[in-house]
Length: 363
Ligand SMILES: [Zn+2]
Image (cartoon, rainbow, N blue to C red; front, side, top):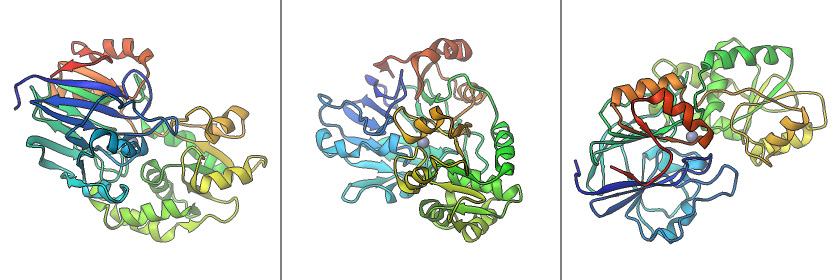
């Protein structure tokens, strides 16, 4: 454990929804935890004036955690630490050092334990041997039917934790129950991230007995990777279903069946085209299931009444957060990725831990 002066600065991602970017300074070493872009698309963390850093450590490959790597020149081109699966998706030319998807690794000589985050292929939480332990969850989910979650167990005096849903407490089974009647009514388009809840919803749809599942190229590629190179991120017992899905899912061709396509907010990929085609028609039904940033096609279609919003959980319920914090015995909690309006509710729910959205936090 590094016992010298250490601190955590909340550059972006605490107090408001925004790109993930946190800075740990310990024993003269400067580590950045994630370097995201958006939401909304295009929003980057303010890193001017931060100066050179020694390493960027990535939790998983979603844009709001890795999309800011274009800022590396401003940070002195530090090496980037990531799991092999996440590293594969990064822009070419970045100097990557590998982290284990589970177990013990090191960053600049600091011991780090990792485990699967139940949220995305190759995604991990990280526990650093700094101060009396620092846990950074990145995005986690204890409920995924698809991605494996290894709950952090090591004690951490400070926990920077995914609180994207604030005090929300509706289990994922209820998300599925709300989706089924819409699916039964006729053709349905679900704009999804291919490396997140897309394959989860496809798996549940297959298990429900539907065989008319249609996907775009991005979803197809994600399913193929999950049935091969990304398989280490899967829960036990889902391999066969995912392999079946990778073979059985057909390309989207007209409004029929259950269609899953990226991107989740319609700003790019197949859904950008499909939403353009179907915005003025009655069929298919369109359901968005994730965070919608202002100004995106998702936001526009929901506001106009053409599309519906039904959340599909990919972040922890309040009860999962409480259980996690009890296990790691956190004394200071920084709720990440939610708005400051959640602070009072989370402070009550997470007592006796000190809950703050303001840095710097001493470690
Ligand atoms: Zn994520």
